[in-house]
Length: 495
Image (cartoon, rainbow, N blue to C red; front, side):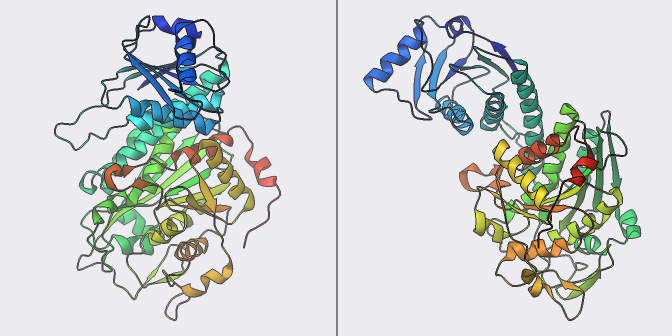
């Protein structure tokens, strides 16, 4: 989808040739003597249009306009969330129409971040998955011309960021949406290499032999039951000085999760193709980085495997040795995500990172706690937690900090190993995070549980591309900020 922005007066819109023209109308819009203003004012007086976010006024073949369809949508008081909701409502009103060229104009002042949110909202609304469909209808929206009465360099920069953000989100959606036989660990490795072909980027892919040599016994245990060979993917984006410590993103890459010997119920098991959404989000962030090229170093780690119930699969009660040397009693093979992540978290130490963030569809308990609105955020470092929380608020990709009290780790004690991989049902998302924390003590660490936000079920079934926006906002916010200065910021270690 091509995006561009230019300065346009309201009265100039009549000459623009579009399949549809959408005008976002705030309640304080300064109306003039043009046709559009007269139309809106007439509708306001008649009560057919109101200053309520999402209120729609539309026409087909409106006299005086070259655009086939004209849609005016209210954004209420004009907050950023109102602008996004207005764009979504306008696009919904055009559902079923063949829209290839769209004009999107702001009748009032627009902030740069609102331009970015609008671009992302349009991409989200018009996204179509086609990869495994024999007669797929391709995405119809191919060109969007944004405009406002005042357009500055900041607006253009915001649109560039929005374009990169869209590319990252759609990369994450693509790989999470693919059926497991079209998104194997080897397929993810191929995708990572393709993304990392550009300058300032690199990709290394390790197979079973290399992973065995590293001593990743926990990761290897999960992969034992699958005919598909595991892949450990290491991506690097080098946008800053070599000596600047990187941010490490660790994405859970379970390309299909049967639960292993602790088999899942059959209902909705097809959705376990989404269990690599953490890995997909890392691919998405790197796709965005390849476009934006911010001044920051980023490492992406993706431990990718299937979790299958073969005769060689790991069994409940088995004890394995992780890369860290800690032994783990596997009481439930369906708690496999933490088993692949813990070895990746140990591997992350070699980069001497400024921060490590793991992203995983980890627990159903997090879905119960937070639903599909906010991702669960756990962090050992207050500054990192605050930065991620703020990145979520700014990007609209929301998260919520959860506790990490040591008392939650009591249920992970084992008589036969250093730690068990599960505790009881109570506080399941927290005990899972406490397990991971054992392997992330040598750097500032955060864990994002995206089990409730990575995909939607039902009629809207499909990947959301979250939390690419949150992660991209956080990473780009570090651009050109010296790592040493960041590390010197006073922090209080959380429990």
